[in-house]
Image (cartoon, rainbow, N blue to C red; front, side):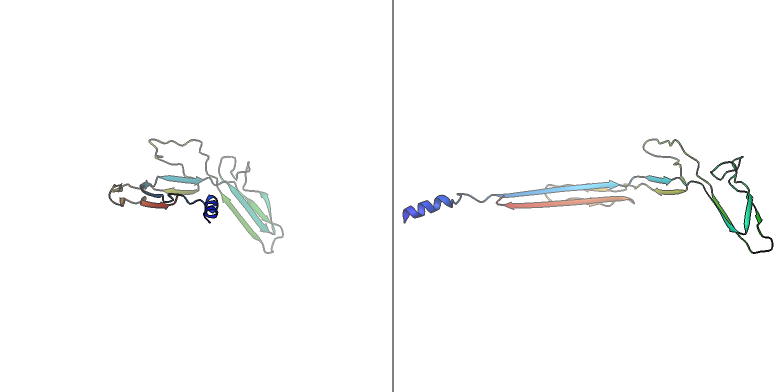
Length: 164
């Protein structure tokens, strides 16, 4: 029986020490102040004309395809009726293009006078105010609220591993 027990223990060895315990505590604080941002999309020119029982001897496009006359102003459209005395419809619309901006100046990370196109979104920067965060080796992290456009996050992570 002792021989059988010895052979059996060779296949199923039991470790002498299987208990390993690990503990880890991690503290962190993250403080963020929102930056100033401008997003602007240039609007192109468009010209549209439509009608029924109307003919045109001149269109508002003038001398080029951007809807501007020879002097850089919106051109004249000259409509006339195809069949006098009958009903007619006439519609004309024009959207001027934004001027093309080729440069933008900034100083100290700030755009003093941003070039705004026809479709623009502006976001004001945050104000730190009393924004603060502290770490301590004896307690959880603490955060203090700041001004508008700020975030503060304090985090404590505790990890306990047994038989790692």
